[in-house]
Image (cartoon, rainbow, N blue to C red):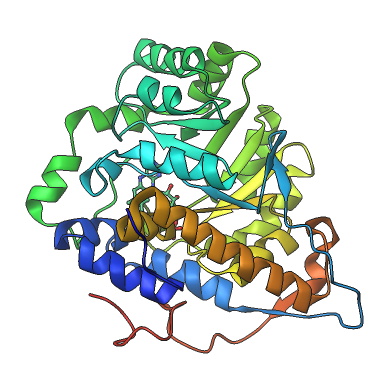
Length: 356
Ligand SMILES: Cc1cc2nc3c(=O)[nH]c(=O)nc-3n(C[C@H](O)[C@H](O)[C@H](O)COP(=O)(O)O)c2cc1C
């Protein structure tokens, strides 16, 4: 597939042209008043950079590691269900792009094809994300299948006891997704975390959907390998804090005991660099990934990551750092946002500001 976009604005417009209204609403929408979605952006926009000058930035290293594996830039591909509804090969497209670019992707329980088929696509490291859709034996069997298929880590999503009320979805779309098996999510406790860990043994374990320092501390006590800060892109609980607002308390609570990653509203390089400065090990992208796939499948996603890489290099250079390890909280400070936040507010040159 030939990809014809030169910047993220064009990418977004192309995705809109290619996607049906149902898919567009599913990707972009969030729960109820969509306050959590907007707060994700608002919290990122409420930080300004404090650049340092007169530093030699001719050589910039943007790479880092995630759970021991090298990634080209500190950007991961968040788990997304239903990808097969708008890309022919479903999550395989994401896997192709992750391998070609050099990052790590999360594969959702609720996407196609099967976890084994996706694993067979490439040997590069990826994480399998579990949604609970059955009893303890069901969970253990799924975790074991993912380990046997070669997934490098297992992720358990814990923020979805109830399905977020996404009012942009038509009743038919809601019914399609609000299946009775989803009720098993209501039974997830820290015992479930322990059970999955016991099932997968030494395979790294990530808990996704942590929103407070208190829960991050409990996760660290459970010796998880990574706390994944997420409010599900505002698609689950409405009226929570923007994720980057919770990052400092979570980094403090974890206190170096495991890795910390974050998602929610991250679409531009500056967003990602702010999170790294505040202590995140990497940042994951959800909607940006979906738009890139919509614009050009795997090739579109690679192109999107390449554009991000150029932006990250420029941002680091202008900030006066040549390595992600040099970033610390002194590089950011509080600031007034300059525009009202929404899912497309990081793209100010869209013809109508926001694409309905
Ligand atoms: C279309 C779509 C599908 C998603 N499906 C899943 C999923 O299957 N499992 C999961 O843990 N999170 C899922 N999420 C949440 C993302 O993993 C991630 O937390 C969120 O998108 C980050 O916010 P952002 O979209 O603003 O980047 C989904 C998000 C989107 C946009």
